Amino acid sequence: MTSTATISTTSSVLDVERIRADFPLLQRVVNGYPLVYLDNAATSQKPTAVIRAIDDYYQMHNANVHRGVYTLSEEATEAYEGARRKVARFINARSYREVIFTRNATEAINLVAYAWGGANVGKGDEIIVTDMEHHSNFVPWQLLAQRTGATLRFIPVTPTGQLDLAVYNTLLSPRTRIVAFTGMSNVLGTITPASEIIERAHAVGARVLLDASQLVPHKGIDVQVMGADFVAFTGHKMLGPTGIGVLWGQRALLEEMPPFLGGGDMIKEVYHATSTWNELPWKFEAGTPSIAEGIGLGAAVDYLTAVGMDKIHAHERAITSYALERLNALGGITLYGPPADRRGGVVAFNVEGIHPHDLASMLDQRGVAVRAGQHCAQPLIDHLGVTATARASFYLYNRIDEVDTFVDALDAAKQVFGV
Image (tube, rainbow, N blue to C red; front, side, top):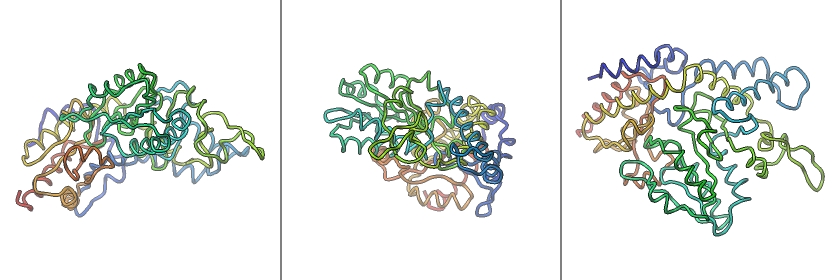
């Protein structure tokens, strides 16, 4: 049974039907049912504006950037670098030069682990990560520790799905070189107390990397207010295309760091014995970049800005609260993570007697797309004491009635399995 109050609140925040009209894929029918797409934590759908921006580049402006003095190259460069400036404004960077384009958040984090980590972390130093990290913010630090002889420390997760800051306090020491943590868990939906974690790390002289892949698309961030040293996020979770990500860093740190990759466009001068490096941000962007993807990300930033990040966040909180309410009422379901007011639009769960993969397959038969598995977060899944979970995740184009469709499909699956 739907909640009239919740529907009314959600409808007053966003005009979801108008938004949905901008997303062609949401009109699909899957297995005879209208598509209900609830795997936004993995990747978001793309509005027509983003698709057209990419198409327009290839049809009308296709040329390499930075290198040509002819019209097409200048147009491509203007569009690509314009996208960088849009991203800088979106996260309130002091300068567009602090915005490095990468293939994805994974590459952005690896860039810091190799370039900054290789120059600043050694034997006897310590690196702190959390037990709720995506593998992309876990394995690079594991590899750095193995290369340098540093020690990896872990902030545990409490039974309510939040980071144990009391333990974090005991881990911090003058040996701590960097703290890397997520702004929002891709499994539990937990929104972490970023400012507090950053402040405590800086108090012992450590640097901080924030994985904002789940935060930037849904809540937005102000890098100047937040105070991290590095922030990584990816385009495809925020309405943009795949193949484009962002590393933001404090300019002084980026200036000091050696290049991550060598080749074209990241150089200033090249001689037989030595080379000198280009200015920021191009020092870290070797080779022909993902031009169309960068332009597409710029269009996605325009779209999100026009809708309003505060409205998107409010809409997701309302729909997530309603989903938790419906799932709790269904019975036989284990929910993971904190209450709705402490999480983003992610709900991980298990249904008693049904393996998550079987459940996801059955939901797909009714047109409902959810994720099942370890969600690239095996240490957290192990901590939960399960082998996998199912996960529904919401975005600005999801409707309240899609939650009802999702829960009805879960109920039907329970009946089939007799649980």
